[in-house]
Length: 214
Image (cartoon, rainbow, N blue to C red; front, side, top):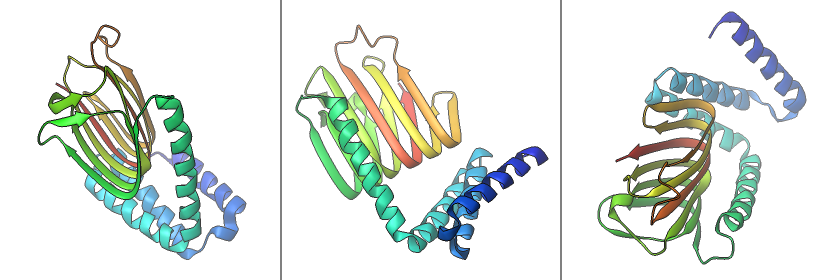
């Protein structure tokens, strides 16, 4: 990062401190510095070290501002309910909320149905080549605070993807986005003509999304 960018970041940080100074204690500043360092590490390719720094900073921030974290969680949950209703409309779908969840849909055949999942911490490995679809058009939404999602998509599915990760990374083929405010919108060329269509909606404050076309 060059000198001008460091100056810009410094002014932004000072502005936040002036606006929200009464919430900034020593541990808060250290936590934010660790998270900022983690983002820089991820952007420079040091992914494992970056996530460790982000995790330590996030834990410190949670301990210092528990009510703030609860508030963010409630806001995220509210967004989840609104977005879930818009994504699925009036059709039937499965809706789940939990603190922690793990889905290993890459080990054996599994039944694919429309669903919306919210969690604080979540991990999902989804291989559509093993899926047994219940309907022609399936909508799968993963939403929460921290998540790690791996999607493996064969070319005979028509696929649409809407994803946003505030802190973390999105990998899709040769495309790789890391750092802050990572977003991808994608529709496969065969989407309109495919017999089976799947739409993925992924939204996390922090995490990693990997998309592999097979």
